Length: 373
Image 1: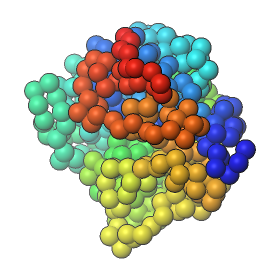
Image 2: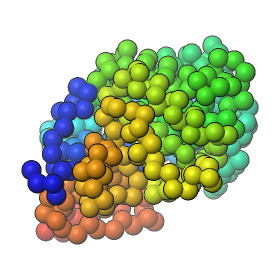
Image 3: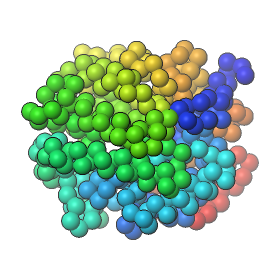
């Protein structure tokens, strides 16, 4: 394999053998059916992209309380598990590997987007002050309920059960969504976590929830099938920290000791997830920062082209590269990279709309677009 095609080299990630180092990053597309149940349209979308070395399926709520957005899937009911099994079987028939990103939005939610009886929760009663889309337009997220220690530990068990549910649904593993200002990230950051117990205060205490969730999932399904996604130095959904370098060095070193299958990080400057959270660190190399603290398998994502991805692999900055938007409009992205072909642009107007347009109707090389549902 030439140095120009490092992306196409196989790699072992924990218990999963991958044919290449191209990862389809998790992307919310708002195409789930009622009650968070995946549909045949989701099956088509993911199976079209099965040539990725690894598909990380879209963020999927672990419970009713975990939902924040319209038309997003769950993994906590028998109906959801059965529907996801149809998706994973189709991806596997097409030769793919697929893990499920486990999601709890925490305070990034609105009652109109959740099931009756569920509620918005967070480490502390601190509102995010962001607006999210609902059936009645953009609305401000409300004040969340501050989780008690008993509820925190129940939520940790909820992640473990969601991991078991994902395996029942046929996934090859799970990825813990600990990024972008959602629940795990809310525990990490000092402006959203005002607790004075074992889950608050120091960087070690604020990392405890992350570590416990990781360990619980690993105990549930095996360490070789659990990955973690972080967004170091990002400010998405208004999270900030008084000392982000100390926080993420602490959190990542703790993950290094625990030993998940991989760490997946987002470069905040390139991924539209918010700027670096410390203005004094404008030139911080986030992938290198993470590599310095984590010796295991590292996936980096955020604005990579084929060329910059190859350079990152060659320079040892990462072991795999995640691609998000390019996979939306290029279901055959791996084949395009192999052929050195042009990469088509995505239509942003259809990122979160309903139906097949902008979802399953992008053409592959040499083929006219065809819509399948």
